[in-house]
Image (cartoon, rainbow, N blue to C red; front, side, top):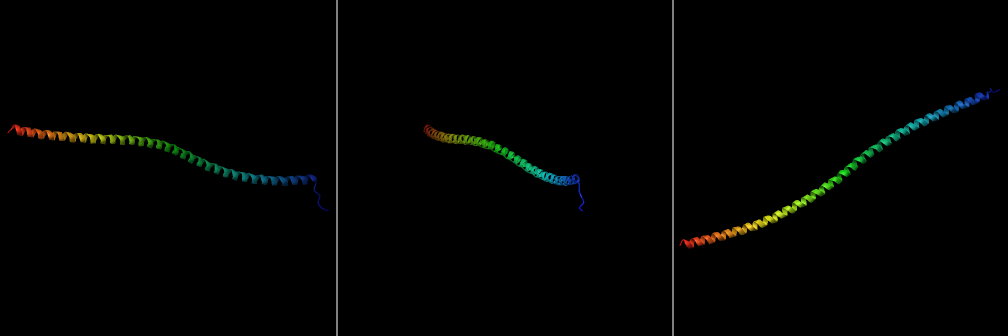
Length: 122
């Protein structure tokens, strides 16, 4: 005859086995959850680094805009200086022409004076 097992013992054994199985399943789920949490944390860290790089790049673009504005201002100033130099060159050529004209006049006057002096001294 087969040993008889009372219903209470049978149910307790089945419940114990199921509890052990659930504990093992829960432990495995917790380990998997912890591993996934570590992966997620690594991804978040990588995204934070990427965000920092993007912010740094944005700052550089803002600086680039300022630099372009400064370059534009400097180009305008350079064009003004070039116009002023051009006007000075025009003035210099006019002064050079006037100087030549004055020298020619002085040369003519000295010639006329020398002729007059030679006529008076005869």
